[in-house]
Length: 178
Length: 126
Image 1 (tube, chains in turn green, brown):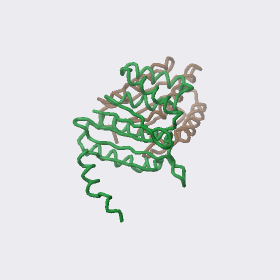
Image 2 (tube, helix red, strand yellow):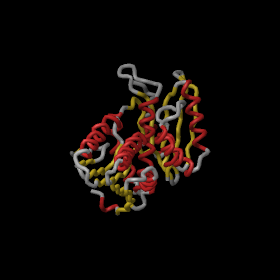
Image 3 (tube, chains in turn blue, orange):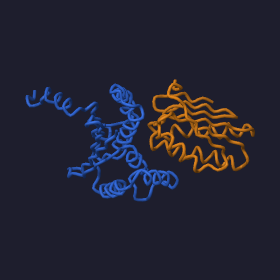
Image 4 (cartoon, rainbow over the protein chains, first blue to last red):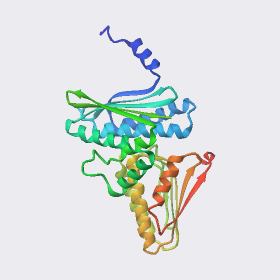
C-alpha cells in the first residue's frame, strides 16, 4: 500500500478547485457516450442557463474528440488515446481543461492554428468556419480543422501551452465559457 | 423511413414528400450514421416529384456533424436547381444564438430552396 496516495487530499483538491467533472486516462467514443449525460446533468444542477450549458457541453465534446483522435499517447493493449479532460467553475465562468500529448511534428501546426484563431474576432471565426466547411481542411491542418474554430466561437477566452514530454509535447488547452 | 433518436443522433423521418430531423447530433462516427440517412433521402426524393418539405430542429451538433449538414443542404440545393420545389424550415429555440447562427449560415448557400428560420419556444422540446 502506498501511504503517500493522499485520498482525502485528492477530494479536497477537487472540491477546492471547484471541479465538477474530471477524467484522466484512456478516452474512447464509448466512454464519451457514457459520460456525456452525467456531464450534462452536472451542468444543469448548477442552474446554468441552457444556452451556456450547451456551449460548455459543445467545447467539452470537441475537446474529448480531439483527445480521441489526436492524442499521441496510446494504451499498450488497445491503442486507446490517453488524455485528461475537466470542467470546473472559475469565478462566474466554466473552465474546460484538456491535456494530451501531441507529436513534435504536429505541435508547430497546432500552435500556428491556435495563434491564428486567438487573434480573430467572432465575425472572422464565423466566416472561417463557413469557409472550412465549404472548402474542407487546408493541407497543413490537424484533422478537419473545424473543431478548434468551433471551440473558439463558444468560449469567451482560451489559452494554450506546450510542455516537454517524453512522447512529444504535452498540449494544454483551457477555455472559459460564461 | 425512420431513424430512431439515440443519445448522440437525432430522430430522422424521411418520406417521398418530407424530411424531419430533430434532436442532437454528435455521433461516434459521423459517416457511419449520415451515409444511410443521405442514401434514404436520395431514394425517397426520387419516388415523387411533388413539393418536398424539410424541417430541421437541432439543439446541438458537433463540428463533424456540420459537414453532414453541409452535404445534406448541398444535395437539396442541387435537387431544387434541377426543378424540385423544396421548402426548408430551420427551427431554433428562442435565445439559442448558436443554432440561429448555424441556420443563417446554411441559408446563405441556398438560393433555389425556399428557406425559413423559425423561432420556437423551449416548451416545445419533448
